Amino acid sequence: MKKSVILLIIVGSLIGVGIILSFYGNYLLFEGLIQNNGDVGLGQSLIIEVELDHTETQKGIYAVQIIDVEGESVSASILDPFNQEIESHLIEQKLHEGFFDVATSGNYKLIIENSGDQVKIFGVIGPEPDAWKKSLDSISLIILAMGLIGMVGIAGYTVIKRKKS
Image 1 (cartoon, rainbow, N blue to C red):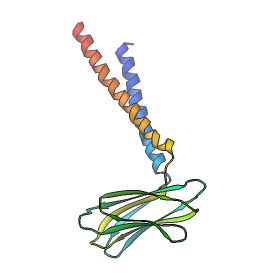
Image 2: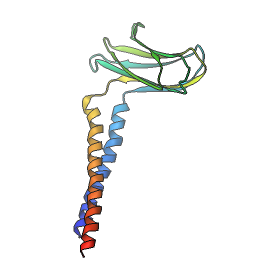
Image 3: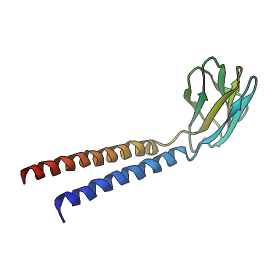
Image 4: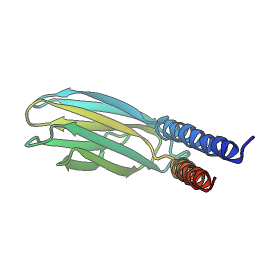
């Protein structure tokens, strides 16, 4: 086989592995998260509950995304298993992410309240992903970049080789 064909197979494999790792990494990041969405009008709220074990995770994560946030008054609160508020924020951007401490095991609630016009809201709550799950995303990006750089290198090598002959 020609040298360029073998190199093309190698860099093509790198690109394929990078894409697969990217999808798998995203799956691992979102597997423990509970999500919900809906249209929330004036005085309504969207409640999302998750069971968290203090022995497995000491941090929780939540995110709120609002479609058409302009002029809307949306707030997000986190309640612990004893229904005490441990985190509260007024959401002023399209996307808000935050962390909270998991002090005891039990049901944690993300309560998203709207005091404005009806708006589409998307919310997520769950345990903070492990560091190795987060690093898998970076690793997949590096492998994908190596494959793409390799493709450019092979194209340049092929052009130079054809000009010589």
